Length: 386
Image 1 (cartoon, rainbow, N blue to C red):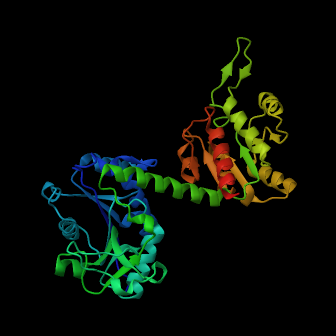
Image 2 (cartoon, rainbow, N blue to C red):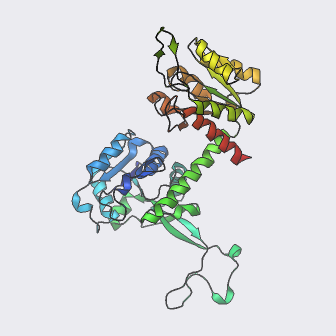
Image 3 (cartoon, rainbow, N blue to C red):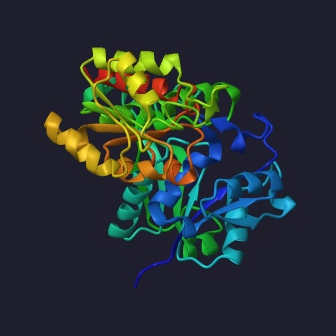
């Protein structure tokens, strides 16, 4: 019989050490957003819940538009002395489940893969509960001079020492029966899911914040490097991407476009590094052709209704495939190409449909440095790989 698995993320508003910690921006999103995305990726947003007494936190979660449900927590369960178990038991009164995954927002390095792997261990070993931890190969002593985890007379070499598992508090998996019987997140047959050493970072004090953010950014760059490693062609749209999408007219009624010099420099940077650049636009514009000529970009295609067909043609000519293509666009005419490309990016002001399928959403808007930002990202990731 398939068990009903749900996830709970307790988010208390009254954080003392770091005010509004749970919704403070961390590496581009609210702190709680990292574990919420991980939970949604592992078991689906319809099975993920947030317990909070704060309307502000509830509003931030709702604004993420993930479909996560909010459980109103009584103020009496949001005090400094309130336990996580009390929140879990309150949740159990409101929501039906067989297995509960309780995630801590202060462990933003948790991934959907971690949760899925831990669930597999929980099911395969028929566990009643599970905790996460990291392996620690340090030697521990009591304050009164007694060795805790090794024999000083037979001091092992580090490489021969299995070490101990240190609980990192990232998440817990608890069967309903165990929670209700023991009033505790752990009980019965307990298992452990081992996580990478860097996940021992928990954000409890201000000094923890910078370290966690640094690790998140480093991981994101590593993931992006894998995605970009084989890029041989960058294709860019024009209106709303290389320009701000505005229409400007001279006093003679001539249509004008505003381009950004920094974008031009970024495209030149990639071409110097051996990456081809192509411009593809629906508009039949001599202005675009003149701009491409100025930039010495010979692959300029204007008046293109079938952008995907044009992209296929370029790939055939260059003897590459979509796995070698990066595409920057902002509107529905770019959608098919961006879905096919290995790497898709968009300006900050792209339409929502495009933002949803982009691997990278730029900090800059169209015509204001978005293309330069993508060029630098590709260049930096290529350098890291090489």
